[in-house]
Length: 170
Image (cartoon, rainbow, N blue to C red; front, side, top):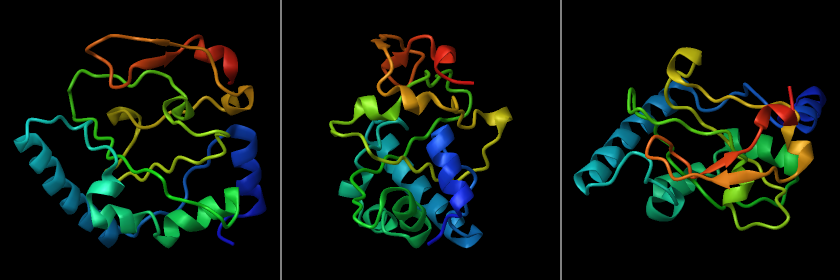
């Protein structure tokens, strides 16, 4: 209903689809202002910018965001009409925090079987190669769960890292 046949094909072939229209500028700015308040509150509690997980269970506004047509429409085109927004996480990488996000598959963190699910990355800031935008390994999804190791490093955001990621796609 929202995506073209070519976009669905791209998602199935590459494992990702970008860009798609998300929120309009006003909605994104409003969400950014809201998020800044949430982030300040978490900092005041002594929490870091990566700790705002299960946001849909903590904040009614984020729960409602999961049903936004700009999110539900494309996801329904990929998975079908019976979908559930089961999680939301403000993944906030602060400038110059020294942390890296290791190569990973999202699904290894989720207790879902089968892992027929979609991650929607809704950027509320400009994202480009100069400020550590999202990167993908096209086609890596066709391999199923990829070997990973648990890492214990203070300079990483996540604790699981895909082994030899370059061997799983372009």
